[in-house]
Image (cartoon, rainbow, N blue to C red; front, side):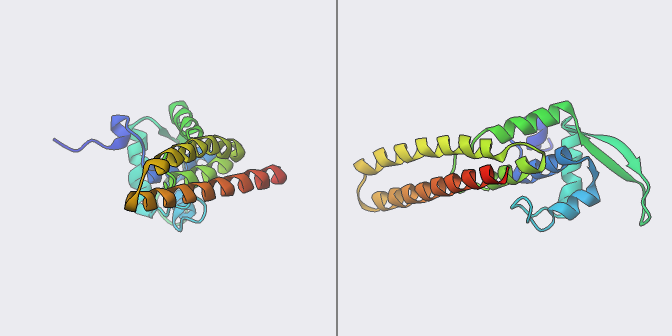
Length: 181
């Protein structure tokens, strides 16, 4: 029995899959253009190779999240297939953007911030919902730290300090995004 892809089974998509879906939601494009945009990870924080882009487009199309929208001529080779999001793909992407990440150092937070702006959504809303989630995490860590000792206390203190630093960054970023608009 062949392994089931996360996309095909309805489970969470990987950061690579979200990046490719986000690129298609931002602007329908062919695989080469998407790969050129994502290859160094500057725009999303996740570098995606050309073979990964094409493999991911096939997975997303198989899951009904993107579709072949057009074909264009290429001066450099074969015709290029333009991919666009399906309504289900766009809805899933928008829904994912609205969910805060649960783990502080998870790269999805940076991916979401980068992709939200790219598809024309308000990144400040994502930062605000993330702030609420991290505020709850601070409260939980403070409670656990009060009861901890030894190395567990050191680790909890590190997590608490890191989460507080992330909250400060979110606050500063929300202010910067508000000034930019």
